[in-house]
Image (cartoon, rainbow, N blue to C red; front, top):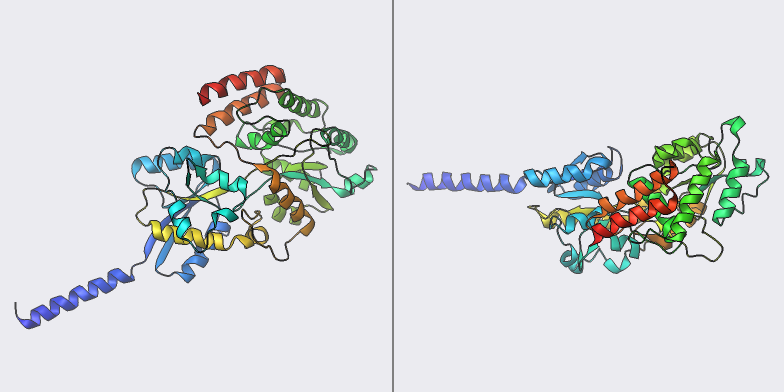
Length: 402
């Protein structure tokens, strides 16, 4: 080969190398968000700062995420990064499907594990590893219509503090002639039903592995009493939190148990003075509890680009202070939220986060949750007493935990 040919060949290799260097690293991200929501917005902002990395965002329905991920792993079509509901982290981590981020976090100048609140941190922790970073946090509280309180002769500045006070308020606020129920909540036979019931169980000393208790029976008895007396809609059994709170926004429920994700919609739909209070406790002096919601950003162990994937997770963590005002989540770490929207309601949810408890964690959480859902449904439909339903659930859970 002459010198000219060598020069041409060399210049060709340099051109190919330059082209290869210019090609961005591509990351696939699965989310339950729709375009315009959290992951889409943050991915666009990240790519503007990091043109060398391209993020392909795909929406997966919340209820399909676990099955779609399992299928993606089996077929080699799993994403690099995904959102998963917090109790599912142990399920995937126990099977070696998630990247342990602890070594990355220990080297990070941005992510501080000690700064993540205990509840959210427990949701990503499994057998000494850290398998995700919370994208935010959620919990639940009691929304109430202060205008309806005044009209019914109730003081909106003293919302219910105990279960008995909640029941009495629901009775006063229920107006069948106006198609108004006193309370809206969700007892649907899905994870949402478990999510709403667990705090009631936990406030009485029980937990996901200890459901056959006198306190749990008392909680289910109260739920059944509220439904049987028409203080909540029969649709409570089949309606999720979003639709349930929609009735509150429409003025057909005076109170609603739900989370901060409702605020953007509530602020535009609810044409009344809406407020929030901590979940009522069984009796004065009882321990508080609240549900830990939202999910986690995790990296699949099969990714070819773990460094770039973690760089994106660092970017998300670095913007934790924005999640309340921009997306309706609570921060999952100790950050300052400047000028929070709805400051009084923010203060309630911020306080509630102190009592938020994780679901599980356990690798078999879906089966445990199903046992709890069955107990709720069988009680509220009159197929079993609370005691019998919870005893059956405990038997099922004990078999799972062995």
